[in-house]
Each structure stands twice: as C-alpha cells, then as structure tokens.
Length: 113
Length: 417
Image 1 (cartoon, rainbow over the protein chains, first blue to last red):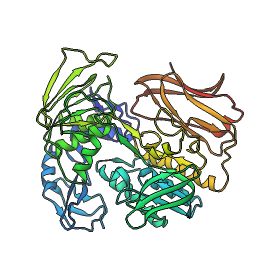
Image 2 (image 1 turned 45 degrees about the vertical axis):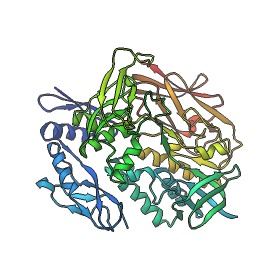
Image 3 (image 1 turned 60 degrees about the horizontal axis):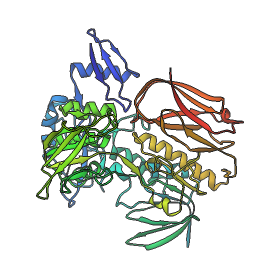
Image 4 (image 1 turned 135 degrees about the vertical axis):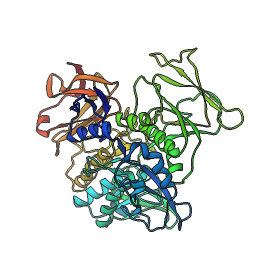
C-alpha cells in the first residue's frame, strides 16, 4: 500500500494505491491516472523564464507543454537556461522542440508585443 | 469632470473578470485603471502552472490565465489605462488617478469595483527577532525578482511560513540552483495546499518543520549569516533549548497576505476580520455603489474563485447602474459561529435577486463536520463535510427561495458528527 498526495488540482486528495494498483481516495478520474503514473513513471511540468534578446531587462515565461520525467527536471532546466528568444512572443510558440528527447516542447506562456 | 459609469480599480484576475462581466451585462461605459505597465496584476509573476482548472477546464500558468481575460477585455473593447495609480477616492465616487500622459485626473464614477488585491506581511509585521540585515525578503518580492527581473535573491535559503507562495518559491529557487534548507511553519499544520507540499517540498527533499519559527536572525556585517529556529508550544511561545541553526544568506518570508484597501480606508468604509470590506451578497460595500472582490476582499487560495467572485461584483455593478439593487431592503447579518475564522458575505439584503454563495474558512483542520446554517432556530441548510482545512476556502450555495421569510441573524457553525 502506497500513500500519495494528488497534485492534479488544488484539492490535493490523499490517494492510496494497493499492490494491485487499485487506487482509492481519489474524487475524480484524473487522480487515478496520476497515482498510477506517479508509481510507474512520475512526471512534472517545468515552468521557468528565458531572456528576450531584443528587449532590455525583459524575460518571458515558458513551460514544458507536456510533463517531463521527474528525474530529468534539472537537466531540462539546464536546456531552458540556454534559450534566448526575440520579441514579439506568442503563447504556445515553441522555443525548444522535443527537449532532451522527452517528446515535450518548451513553449512560451506570455505574449510580449 | 469626466463621468464614467463604472470604474474598475485594478486589472488582475478580479478586475478584468469584473469589467468583462459588467460589459456583458450591459454596462458600456467602463474604465479599468491599472498601476503597473501591463494588465494582469500579480498573475504576471506567477509563472508556475495550476491555474484555470475550474475556469477553463485546463491547467494554465499565471500569464496564460491572465491572457484569456486580456483577450476578452480587448475583444469587448473595454478601455483601460496602464501606469495609472489611483491616489484618492471619495464617498460620492470621485476617483483621482495620475499617470505620465494625463497628469492628475479626477473622474466621477457612477459605480466602482475595487479589485486592488493584497500585500504581504513583512518582517516588521511579525516582529521578526534579531538583526536588521539585508537578505530578508518576502516571498512575492523574491518571486518578482526572479520571474520578472531574472535576479536570484540568494544561494542558501531558509523559508519562514508555509504559505503557497513560499512553497512555490522553494521549488522555483531549487530548480534555479539555490539550496533551500528548510521551510519553517509556526502552526502545527501547513498554511499551503497539500499539492504544493508534495510538488514543491517533498519532490526536492526540502524539510518542513511544523510548530517551529525563527527565534533569531543573525547578520552582523550587513548581510544575513544565519537564522535560528526554535520549536513553539501550543500557545505559540518559543521553547528554550530547541534551537536549530541554519547558515544561510537569505530568509524568505511567506507569512500571510493582507487585503490592500487603503483607498477604502479614505472613505471610512467598514471592514471585517478578513481586513477587507464588509459586503452584502452583491459584493457591495457599506458605501453605496462601491463593490469589491478578489484578494482585496479576502485572500483566496485559488485564482479561479477570484475571477468567479469578481464576476458577481461586475454583474452587481451592472444591476446597480440599472437601479435594480435596493439598498433600503432589510439587512440580515451573517455571522461566523463555532469553528469558523470568518464568513462572507457579512450581511444580505432581503429579497435577493440571485442565489447566494456563503464562503468561509475554518480555524483549524477538522474532519467529519456538520456545517449548520441557521437563523435563530430555523435551519436554512445543513451540509456534511468530511475534511476542511484553513488553507482551503469553503463555499456553500444557498438558493434564494430558502432565504424567504428569514429575519434573524444567520449563523454558520460547525458541529462534530
């Protein structure tokens, strides 16, 4: 039996997963998916910000458009640190495709005109 | 003097939602005043994800969430002014603001929505003991430095207070290469959401010490050198002999947020224990035609609920401008009873035009409770809640027909099952 805190939404359900991967304590179907993922291949979405080269003192926020493996978080941060973009930026714009082969893209999360 | 039907002060999650809703309900003459150089308020620096699950049924970052509202403001052609600080407000709704282009301007509003957010408690507010050195900074300020200005605040960090911003910053600073030594919380339970304890602390092996606080800040040469944490007893008094020392260059304070309502203080608007205004079910303050919502009314844990509350304020402002809200209706007070730290709204006007939503927080974590909503001996509503914690606002909807004939004060209280 494993106990987990669900991180899918602010409610933060206390989940229990037994040896047969039966999930209890979830109040929505997403909790069940989270629990099984967390015990088989835990992932996290990374958010950060990167330089905007043609605007002084300006950063633009980014995220991974899919969660990346939890044990690759710091490596992904190193890749994000290398990125510099040019304004204008648009939400959803890919600035680094398939980061470290994770099948996740680093995308812009803020419009800068 | 220029006249505007509705002035919205602040363009964060609350201000934009209120303006959009007012416009959709027939108010055409609106002006949003924003002190910063862009719309969106504090969401601009909240670059983490977890927003929008209720509002948009998907998980967004703060900037993405705010952009959805910016798009609506622009689509509906709602006028706004940036870099415009409101510096005065009068009871008869004259708003004074200033900016570089217009100078000092007075406008006569017919209705106002206050959506000015909240500010952070700081070292002075909690009487932080010890040296007054640099390296002590509030979590929101550290967040702004890092996410907007690209500046790291330190390398070895202790966080006091387990509020959500502190937890989010623990993760953010760790990912950016800092060593977060621990989070220390005065109370025996966390002030943050469970999910943030998991994804911001446990994920990174950052210890959370409960019932422990800073007993001394040491920084003799101008910069913080170490902090000493001590355990506290059940009366929150420091227990001698329990000291833990942490060598660090930065102490981040995440010790609470306070509604920012200095403008309402200018007009002697009555306030409540939330430190925001006293409001009725329309989010109208005790000053005729001045509405309020969001974190300047009471501090929320989820932005989606801020937007929702602000829509009510915007819709109500529209009703007010159409003379549909009758302030001379009888007032029925709503009071927090056993187990509650506060309840909103603090009163309702009889003959409510809409169903009302009662919002409250519990004083301490509780399980298996009956929530009673009573007026004298009359039970208006009874609801069972398996778990409630202070960091999660509780909302209970009451159909307006259940309030017909209610004359006495309404009390919301908890009882063990």
